[in-house]
Structure formats: C-alpha cells, structure tokens
Image 1 (spheres, one colour):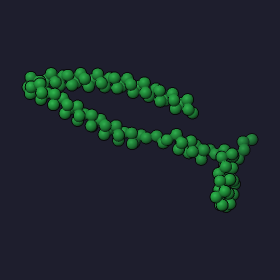
Image 2 (cartoon, one colour):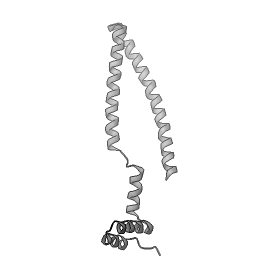
Image 3 (cartoon, one colour):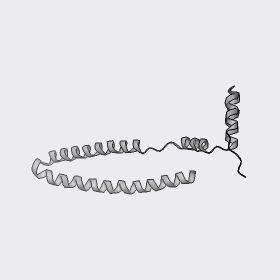
Image 4 (cartoon, one colour):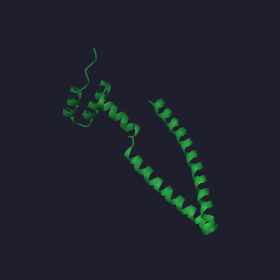
Length: 123
C-alpha cells in the first residue's frame, strides 16, 4: 500500500513538474507578447502595469478554480481509508480488539454484539 502511495506521488510530481514548466513558458511568452503589443500604445511603464494586472487576474482565477477542483475531488486521508477498509472487511483479530475495547469501557452488551457480528471463517 505504501509503495502504491509513493509511486502515485512520484508520478504526479513528475507530471506536475512538466505542466509547471509548460505553463511557465506559455506565461512568459504571453507576457512578452502583451508587453510588445501595449508598449507602443501606452508607453513602457503602463505596459508593465497592464502585464502585471493581467497576470494577477489570471493567477487569481486559476487559484480559485484549483481550490474548487481540489474540494470536489479530495480523497480521504490514508488513515480514514484504512479504517474504512477494516470496517468494511474486518478481520477476527480486529473485531476481538474492538470487543475488548468495549469491555474495557464497561459496555459488555456492545462487546457481545461486536463479537457475534465477527466474520465467519472461510472453509
């Protein structure tokens, strides 16, 4: 499971690095083109202001879109996924531990219910 997480992390990192480089090249080329277009009309100082304003607007829009995308596609933390997996397919040892925990808390009825719902042995 850890190998899968590391492999996915490294592949996303490499894909992200390529996308960042492509975006940086496109951003610089676009800024140069915008400056070249605005400089004769507004003068060099105001052309810098226009380029900076357009860049800030694009960056803010991208950040808002990225935040909403992450909220929509957020994956649960690894601990939560492991606990959900154990709850969906509990082992007998896990159920015994839960029952023992319920007994320690002073809830024998809950411990008995947990023990009766333990998974049946295969075979």
